[in-house]
Image: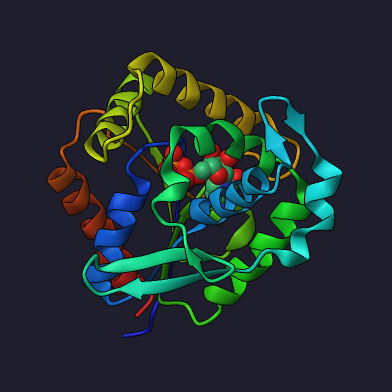
Length: 231
Ligand code: CDP
């Protein structure tokens, strides 16, 4: 059976990565978390004094982009690939609310996007990939065989993200998580370069009231139909 490309886009914390990992595992495909790459660049900028509450040195970051090497390495125990920045495993470090607070500003920079999109397109060149993000069906793989667009209410999404952060031991307030979700939605949807929009041919899934199992079953059904069509 020929392999397909699956693009999953949507607002923050809509469960894209959870279902993308499940589908990739089931199909034996590669899963690529494109958001982790924007988070990695943001983490680099924070570590190198280029972005903080005091401001963002955009030119400084652009001039250092060649120093940023992002890679993924499959972790057998976790069952998915973890992200590395210049050889350092930063999978856990990039998931903080602090990184989330800066990432949408970094992701709005065209030079950053050009670098990461090029790498993402190379990773998906052989098909057999499930990639999630904001612009996968519109910019990275406009010819993807299947495009999904995930939505849920901001409150549901903030609760899910709050639970995740508390689970990993971070001290955060629900109100701050909700504010971050809403602020990122705003910046991601209104930026000039590759804004978050639903591709015309994407299938929209509102998972506000779906359990993880219901969501997986629904999407697997759609994937199976797409595979039948592209046989
Ligand atoms: O996990 P969550 O949905 O909260 O976000 P993420 O997928 O880790 O993405 C973090 C941020 O990276 C987003 O809020 C966007 O600003 C940016 N991003 C992007 O611009 N384009 C992508 N393809 C993926 C992420």
